Length: 147
Image (cartoon, rainbow, N blue to C red; front, side, top):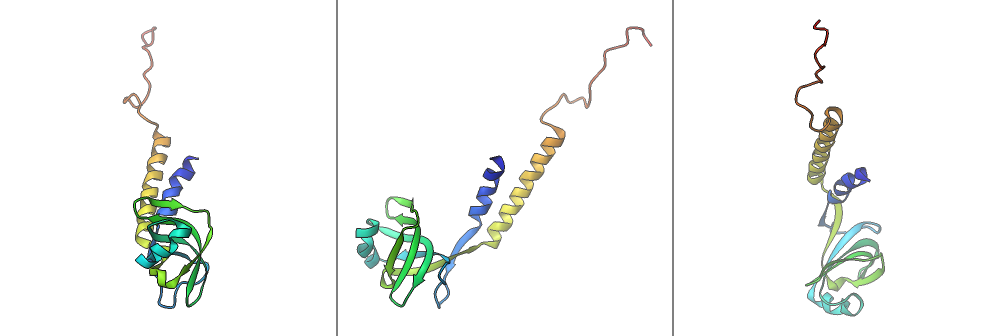
């Protein structure tokens, strides 16, 4: 359980969103759609009011629509809400920007260095122990025979 807790931040925190290529993201890619004002109004009946961004996996796209398996919805005033992968059709004219999720080399390097430092610290504690008597060993009582 501790190992999973230590590995979770590096596994999830090493990604960032970057602008998608002009040709558009390929199906199966993790994407984030930034919704414009027209889209907020148009998507309100199906996603709720004030949608800022949709994140998920792009199922397909055409000249007029993105089909997204939604994992997160960011809305004005209510923050991010996790979704279970429901498929949503988003008209392209509702979208201000498209970004792809990609590995962040800088964040990954920092996370790996921090994890390495933490593992070295834990290894040192397991070898040396925590605390101690400061004497570097145990003292034997004096020999009653005086030798």
